Amino acid sequence: MYIINKKPKIAVIGLKGLPAFGGAAAVGENIINQLKDKYEFTVYSISSHTKHKTGIYNGINQKVLRHLPLGRVNSLLYYIRSAFHVLFFKRYDLVHLHHSDAAFIIPFLRFRYPVILTTHGAFNITSKWKRYNFYFKLQIKYFVKYANIITCVSKSEVEDFKKYGIQANYIPNGISKIEITNIDKGYILFAAGRLIESKGCHFLLQALNILNYKGKIIIAGDYNQSTDYYEYLKKLSNNLDCDFVGLITDKNDLYKLIAGAKLFVYPSMIEAMSMMLLEVASVGTPIICADIDGNMNLFKANDVIFFRNGDIKDLSVKIERALYSLDAIKLMASNLRNRLLKEQEWSSIAIKYDIFYKKILDKYR
Image (cartoon, rainbow, N blue to C red):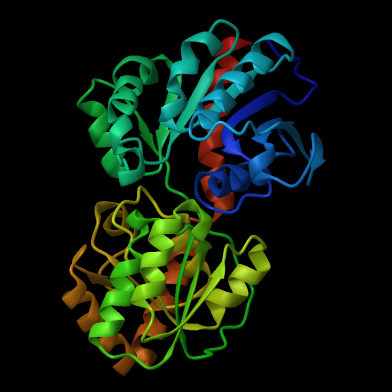
């Protein structure tokens, strides 16, 4: 029940921290920023993912739970602790849960609240989590269905849920209108929140070695996620002019880095709908990416340059062609930016979530 004259209160679990560094957290933050005048949001975060303490951040309530040094179990405990607080210490009108791996808390949340679940690659399991594949399948088979409404950022994911008899709704990720001048500083850029194997950075370095590339390369991403993989990347870069700059947490700094690249190469092998690629598209930097479903559902053939997923030789050929036709691919990037601003700006994407919020709240008033 909610009082008509007051903003409905929505708890958000799964973003883990504001400001967002990328991925699902960036999706959630953009939705909230568009709708915070209509709703009172509380984001459940964890101290490992934000520098802020419990309080107000950018007009949004943030409840920061203390990080526990328990490795991968800490993520599981984050969901349990968030659900416990929502159920016993606060009162909301709706819970918006991000990530299907947290679906096990939905039946408990439903004792008090309606729940919207947004998935960001429920069927895309990286090598890091393969050994826990049974757990993710368990969530999809037994718990996802208890959400009142399910939304997916990927069309493929909607179809995959149908195999389980689950109805889901497709809402793509959006872009912001970034006003920044593209100044081609001559480097090739790869960037990701986490520098892990599934992001495919090694494919880029291997392809550039094939080309005996002599230009500047910049690799951005948190290399503490997998130190063995980072050491492997450094070995691959021995004969290249390559700088590893770590995770770029400030969005303005990230956009400036993207704007300075003559080419953004993203060989990621698994994506639902990449926020990284959308951010690059919003700046207008030319893109080369793998021909995986998540990318091909997002981009058309004349938007970006696709290469065959995992095919280093094909990637090297596509990079070489792009470098010889920079003016043409810059025009492609500009046209892509204009199209996405018309079709997928966050202001229009957030309206789709707002419709579902209202639908649920009207039902449970």
